[in-house]
Length: 124
Image (cartoon, rainbow, N blue to C red; front, side, top):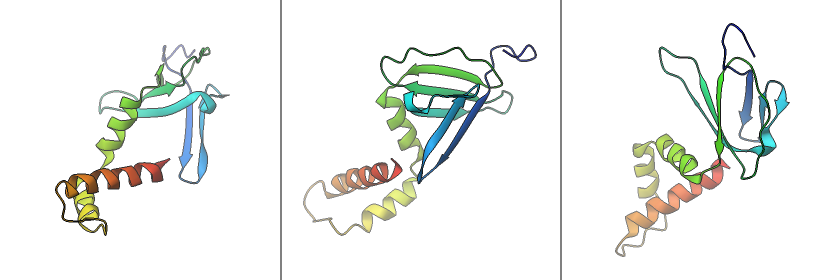
């Protein structure tokens, strides 16, 4: 535990689309227990990392340089994060360019849901 910054943990996260994520807390690999993570920071505060872990994860002792919150994995956080990242103009253009719009009632809603599903599948 840092005496200069009590309550902070050393965090390392490295993620890329074609590689498994590296998630370390104080040098301990915790990636296999983490289903999602969120990094937030405000102008007047340091970074905060929230790890959403699998059910039954027993945890570990941590110390370091970033505030770390560990919570049970909850799909709502992942969905909200995904939807927050969607650019409405890009979604609008993608849906209107779809070849599977059929002119039947609800086609735009079906198109939006299909497009979001495709983007979500590509994000995994």
